[in-house]
Image (tube, rainbow, N blue to C red):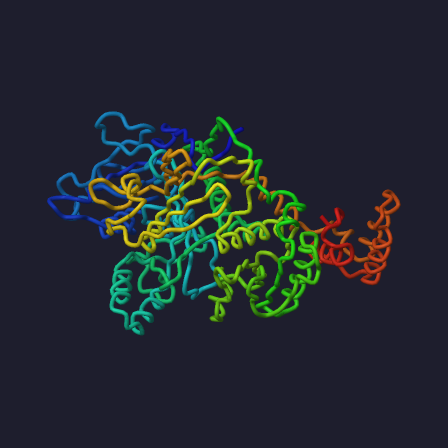
Length: 590
């Protein structure tokens, strides 16, 4: 068994890179002074037109220029600027691997500067050339016209060891930051906003779908069109890893960005480097055989007598359809249909399935976000109209499991395992550090599945009581702070202490196959198979070739299609009608 990860395997074509580019290294620290963006702005200004610039940390920044270029005259011209005397700028050689003390740009930094060039203008007119002045590539996944106040931007960085990381960096218009600064009375927030205004200014470049640095040569630009990295108070920027709802949603997800990057590298940089996701072999895998949440029969027993309440917080035709479909898909898992109710408010002691809009909708419209967390008294699971309009059996099975786990947490008993088969001898202990609250949470699980939480407030409190012996496995011995990459501890019933460390290396699915499947679903019917009459004929043909117990329903469905006559249906509308007639549980519908 093997998996793909976001660690890259890169083979450089150094000869091709040398043939097409010259690399300049800028020493940003000279005589105790730190050179920053002004000097880099100078390098990519109208007199030089760097193809890419890159700085991340340390005392060097790099610029990449396209050949032909007279390097001697070029360096002389740069050194006319007082900031670049005393060998502050030199030519360096591209290398695949760092060897000795040679002045070079190599490995991940060489790949990153090539990656950054993806945001460079590819116009045939030199005056329009520019590059993205940043240590990372900034891709905009969702830009809905001008004057959008907030953009969640994909920040693409290549770390040592060729680990490709995508983070969501929120950027706001300068005018929105100034407006918040004017209206806020929180002194701490005021300082945060003032600090943000000192950060680099970016403008959205439609041609490459990226943010690029706003340079002096761009002239004065409306503050509504300038973007600066700055968060919204109380709202964390996040992006789902993978979306299946539509091809647009897929491309906006982190997985879609990974896919976009690999396609762009193949299209524009394959001459200079061959890039693939690393393949890791799995030495062993342990099947999970003792869970009680696998089969519908097991879930049915766990839901025996459990009230289920569907809460419609959208209250339109789509949400009503979703509520009906959800109820239909929940029925096989319960003992009494009367246990399922529908309303507008949550019910205590019921599993509440809340239908609402996604966060983007509430942010754009200014309406109150209807999301509510679960509590010990209210178990809640949220379905958004935007992402689950085509709810499936698999989705329902998953959210039932999640609700049962929430119920178990509130009752302090885990029922997802057959504990007798696990044959535990004593207590298992789990520990995790809540960095937002600066608390350590311990969880002790008894052999029968009963458990209890313990919270150690404030990491500086030395009294960890009975958990004191675990302190040294969670804190840095010199500072007393949390070990930076520690995720938590797992202590077995035999007393074995396992430290779990966080890694930025993640599993990557078969992105090309996912893209192809979503595209196929969204592809229209053939032109001569879109009308009601044509689709009715297909249904009739299917019935003559297949003897089925639901033929009577298919006949009615065919008649309904014929009523539509020459009116056309897309796949989504056709499937909706089919589900209404046969139900989602039919293998024809699926």
